[in-house]
Image (cartoon, rainbow, N blue to C red; front, side):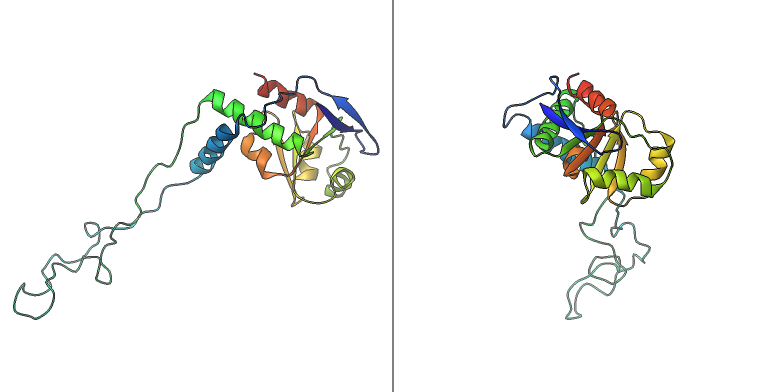
Amino acid sequence: MKFKVYTPDASSSTEKDFANFPALEAEKGNQALKDVIVAYQANNRQGTAKAKTRADVNRTGKKVYRQKGTGHARHGDRGAPIYVGGGVAHGPKVRDWSKHINKKVKTLAFKRALNNLANDGGIDLIEKFDVEQPKTKVFNELLSKIEPNGKVLIVDKEFSDNATLAARNIERVFIVDADSVNAWDLIRFNKVVASEDGFNRILERANA
C-alpha cells in the first residue's frame, strides 16, 4: 500500500509503497476490533462505586412501632430503604469490570483498525520529526502543513526530548510511541502522522 511521505520540514512529499502492510479482507477482524475496544473501555472502569445496604447503615435495629393495631403498614427498623438515611436497595457494589483478550485477537483488531484508517486516507508519514528547538510554535507550524485541522495522533519509534516538549501543549495533539499505540488509539483519531521509523515499527507489530 502506498502512503504519502513528507520531508522533515513538510515542504514537499512523495508516495512510497510499503509492501509489508498487512492488508485484510473487507469484513475480517471487525468482531475482534469490537471486542478489543469494549475490553479497553471496560479495563478503564474503576469499579469502586458502592452504596450502603440496610446491613451497612448505622441505624437502630429497633422496630419502628408495633406490628399490629396501628392502621399503618408494618415496618421493621429504620435502616430499610424506604426511610431517609436507610440503606439502598440494589445499589452499586465494588466489582472488577476488566476483560481479558488474547494476543491473537488483539493483533487482528490492530490490523483491522490500521486498515480502516489507511483506507480512509487517515495515515500520513514524515521522514522524521526533526525538531531543533522545544517550542510549541515550531511543531505546530510543521503539523499545520500536514494536517491543519482536527485531532491528530503523532507516532514515532522514539521521541526526542525537543519533540515531546514541543508537541505536548498542543490541545489537538496526542503523542504515543510505536510500541504503545493500540487499536483504541487508531480508531479515536481520524488522522495519524507517523515517522517512517515509527510506522515501520507499527508494521512489525502488526505482522508479528
